[in-house]
Image 1 (cartoon, helix red, strand yellow):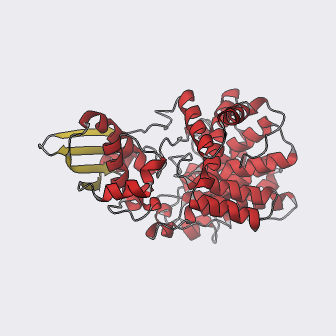
Image 2 (cartoon, helix red, strand yellow):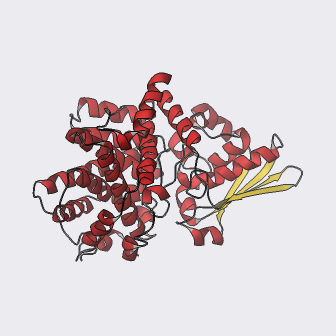
Image 3 (cartoon, helix red, strand yellow):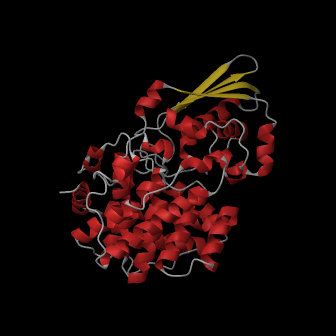
Length: 428
């Protein structure tokens, strides 16, 4: 039996409880609210404009457009153990397919649960070295997208193996965009989601794919993973659904910056307006590899800068969309505060299952104050409450142009999907 076949058996055998469906509703709302808010950005306008003018219409075009939009603002969900953003890939494709088939809300939410599960398990199996060059959301996303679409199309086991096989052969997505702050990252989500739906749709018609796409001699692990951990595909089969272990992001920046942001916000309350001489951020190697950027040159750079995000949190007591504006970035450039970053062994040992950071501020008088986080707001250990989740969605929906009444109606419909006979139209 192939690893893909074993993975499908594990995921399709997992029971779905009412609480799982309820959780899935919250993650669907989070993803769709992110999409609605994105067209106001330059990258969002380009993605939406291309889709409207040249991308055509139908399931694939909708999947591509919405998946890209979900990921634009850097505030969509993240699964820590796999270092993937499942919502931006899984939800848009599943929504588009479910709408095209007239499937009910329970079928859709079950597909979302399965898509998250497959994407997270594949992502956890690629090993740490994969992440140095490859963006896990882009490379592991097609597997999750194919699983969700295949669930909705009621593919049999052989068809599901084909679908995941062809999803794996489309895996791609490089980190090189970080070198110049270019716009490729949401394209990763868009292509991964579209590749997943394409793979499942072809399998439905009998288009075969490689059963051993993961472990084969010319497969995914051999080509792209120097230190794969295939045993993680089947880890803890009786545990909770991966969706319920996925973090919701409260701040619109790379998740690797969030533990440090959270600690810095605590220090803002402690320090107030006292001038800082020096700031030290201690975290884990992956955060440093992506987010050590003392002088961010663009909005995208700033969202991937530990130094920028921490100093902004310390000075302003908040990190929001306005924190990355051109004017705010100019103020950062004039701050004159030294921000050092480094790795701490205890945080490195806990990664990727726990993402931690410690922030130390040295004031001009010599006093030092410190705060640290071993879990962050939005993590399973420190979840955002229902009111906070709704407040985030409401902010995003209204930021994207929805009126108050329209936003409340949309939120209620999404949160009630477990009992819905069909899905509402895509909101963007």
